Length: 173
Image 1: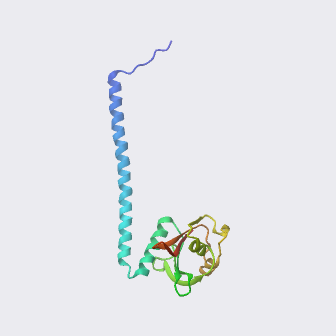
Image 2: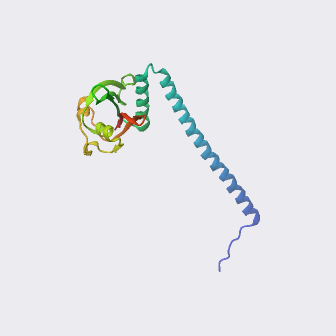
């Protein structure tokens, strides 16, 4: 017959104290990791603020915001489309690419857009999130050909002001 081993009270007390201390160490490690993440987020937000303060005008501000959004979600390219009040047509006004030098990240590109996903977003107010733009029913590769870029995945959102859609922002990978 095997004899059951029973721990002594001192051993149980010792093990309980060690387990309690191990729990404190684990909780402190979690708190430290949270603090480190919060510090990184705060530093990132401060850099955003510095970049915005350096912006010379509203167009510069938009460039900074688009670049930061693109960097944050890992986009390779971003585009801002606005409604031309005179022609009532959507125009691509800002194009940015993450692969270029910082000074060349964004360009002003006043190109009228009459079809494609940006127009669909503008007309419907729907967000488009697709991992293969070529399969989207409203995809048109005009901008890709124009810019020499092949879009793969896309997220596009309508820009709203006072419950009115005033433009479209797309982020591409």
